[in-house]
Length: 473
Image (cartoon, rainbow, N blue to C red; front, side, top):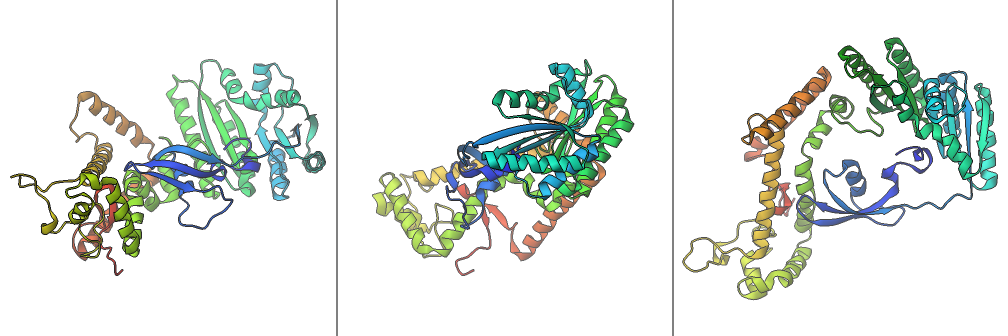
């Protein structure tokens, strides 16, 4: 995301393919270099959005764009924030392919002038950039200038060379540091939201009015071309009342964005202060999936592979032959012994990588030991199952930090983490968490009524697979 997202999209639109190491240790590839595909799930976007929680990304294939033939930048001042935002809304709704459009309020422009020794007009300002052919850039600039004139825009300043564009964009790039230095000794509480472009004026104007009424110094910047804006509240770190007011302002900004059909965060992420708002935005059912991302990372792809095996027994036999080539020399009796040890795929359902019990006549024993021998593939998948169980234990430790055994340092760390998160779960968020627990309990009751255990169970390296799955379903 960032200043170029209005034309070129966010990271989601610019990642074509990934190489990922999943929680089970398997290396997979998602996506292709093709411009479009309708083959299977869109796993690339899933992994990009998960930000590393479903697997370790080791390779990325990105979309490339040619350097534009012509680039031109401009700044324009407006009598009010409402007029500046109205200009942006009209530009986007008319379909002008503007490359960048950023909003700075008068406070921010004043701080930038002091910080960077500039002489910009201290009024709400738009910074814009246009990419394309010389004729295309000229047409875009003329259209935008006409729209800005309808909204009282004045003081257009154009820049065509890289040096001139850098000078104009300094105001935007130094906005955060300029804002913080405008109040020596302060700390900045920042928040960001994103709303539909048609509701941008409502969200920005109400947020500015609330900040003015609070008396807390602040600054406003925004990637307004895609409906995203940031508020920075400059507080005295020793004033608890001021911090509480800033937190309240943050909550009001986010609640308004959700009410307008937006999101609680366009760029910064959820973190600690917006955990409750994530429940409001996504719902308890979706958040319950987030809570179990570790299990999904280990088991989702195993369930998919199990589906493939059940539906295509011929491919299963081909897979068995390939595995026998790889580990047959370690199994008793070579490849044939490996097949005998595994069992036949057509007897009692698929015998896939030691997931199902082996017939007694196929179990090999070594010496006088009563335990069946394990070939390398079995040991490998047992190890992966133990890894899944260990990750489940870690997840339970985070949910119940005080009850988990461990050193005093770990106990104190988990208690502090729990105590720090809990105050920021507002009542709606707490109700959503309770609803998520009720969903999980209801799921377990329905599974028990069907006969035996939950619908998902640990199955070696495949993490979780559907219990009731059978070849004839």
